[in-house]
Image (tube, rainbow, N blue to C red; front, side):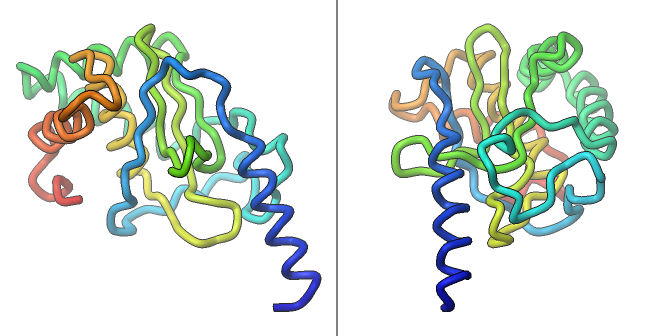
Length: 184
């Protein structure tokens, strides 16, 4: 590795660490990325990989592909009824009220990278990409799954750290996913 490459890598890593959220009373998810289906880099408003100043830690516009996917997913959750409709309603309220913040990359929470964070008031923060170093890709479906996971945490009061909280949120999301996208 050259000195220039090492410097760029350290600079990028430092900017990721600087983007740790201040909130400590939220639920944070560290869902693994699923199979690559539709990359989110299709919109020009989202910063390019490698542009990793702390300004990139701020919210970015929601890509149109994600907006369309949310609308379709909300309709599907409503039609499924039960627990699906229940957390779908929380998700829809957050979405319609503009309480969903999109960040360009995952962020550090302790020793983990977080892809989503939900607060009891319905606010959510979600990551479009894994990192600015081109070491992974999140798809529209990955972001939607994270969004649903956070809505399940909020709806069913599943707190991180409580026994089974993450597993229970994942169970709700898997039960409400179409068969073709439920595998993680």
